Image 1 (tube, rainbow, N blue to C red):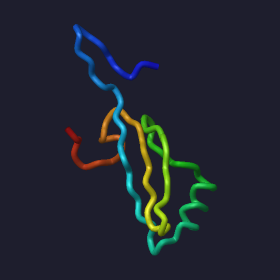
Image 2 (cartoon, rainbow, N blue to C red):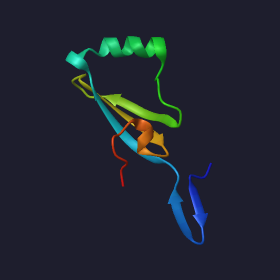
Image 3 (cartoon, rainbow, N blue to C red):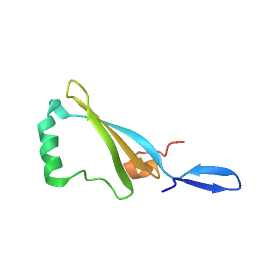
Length: 80
């Protein structure tokens, strides 16, 4: 699927990638894993998971999400 709208030689990006960084409360990765097993990713409609990893200390999770706008991620102000 093409992610660009092309009109009169100009291209606009319809989707953006966002890096979401979550810190585990008290480093409790197990509680997050249990919630994931029970409920899945719990993403809002219009947000698609792309990739994720946990830092070597197990304190933070980095997630790459794709969406059409920052408002779908619950950011207070749109970016850009």
